[in-house]
Image (cartoon, rainbow over all chains, first blue to last red; front, side, top):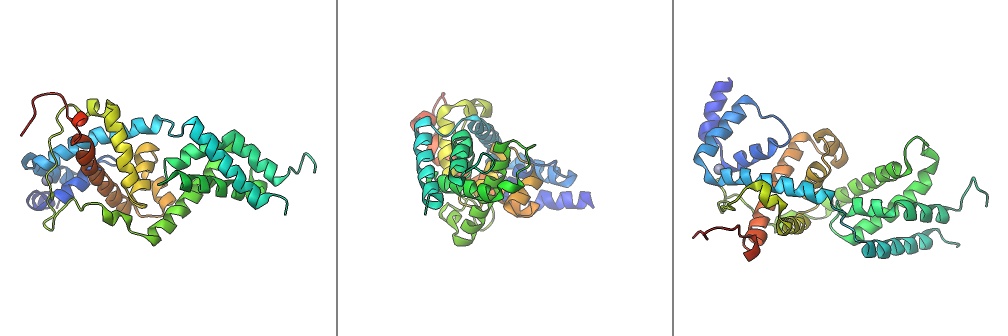
Length: 94
Length: 196
Ligand SMILES: [Zn+2]
C-alpha cells in the first residue's frame, strides 16, 4: 500500500502539497510515503527546494525574535498607566 | 478594609505593578496591536479579581495571571475569526494548478546566517503583523512559544489537521512577504554577484 501511494505521490504531488509537507516536517516525522513523495518532488522542483531552505531561516529568526523583549520601558510605563486608568474606571468608588 | 480583604482596585494595581510588564510582553507577541494587548491585560486583571478565590498559593501569581491572559487571548481570536477574513488580503501564493504562482526566488547564503541578520528579523516581525487572526497565533504559539501541537489545538480550539493547514499557510505567506520586503530591499541582498 505504501509503495502504491508513494508512486501516486511521486506523480501527483503539487507544490502546495509539497509545501504543506515541508511545513508538517517541522512538527512531526513524515510517513514513509510522504517522505518519498516529497523527496521526488524536491528533486525536480527548484521553488519547493528554496522554500525548504528559506523556512529554515524563517524558523530560526522567529525563535530569536521570541527571545527579545518587545516592549520598551517607555512604552510599558505608558501602557501600564492606561491600564491603571481603565481599572480605576471600572473599580473605583462609585 | 482589612489585610485579609484588600481593596480590589489596590489588588489589581499591585498585580499590574508586579506583573504588568510580563503580561504585556506576552500579550503583544500574540495580538495585532498594542491597544488590543492592553485591553486584554486589563480584562485579565478584572477576571483575576473575580477568580481570586480559586487561586491556589502553590502556583506563582504570574503563572496564574498568564493562564487567565491566555484564555482571554484565545477568546479574542475566536471573536476575530468570526468577524473577519483578514487573511484574504494577502496574496494567494498558489495558482489553480496548485503550483507556485511566483516561484520562490534564490535568497542565496546560508539560512542560519540569514536568520542572524537584524534586518531579516525586523522584516519577519513586520510580516508577522500582517498575518491575520487565525494564522498569526498558530505560528506564534508554535514557533515563538514552542508549544506542542496538542497544546496549540486546545488553546485555539482547532483540530491537528486544521493547525497543520494554518501553519503551512502562515509559513508560505511569511516567505512570500519576506521576499517582497526583505529580499527586495537593497540591504537584504546577500553579498556576492548580483543575479539577473
Ligand atoms: Zn514544488
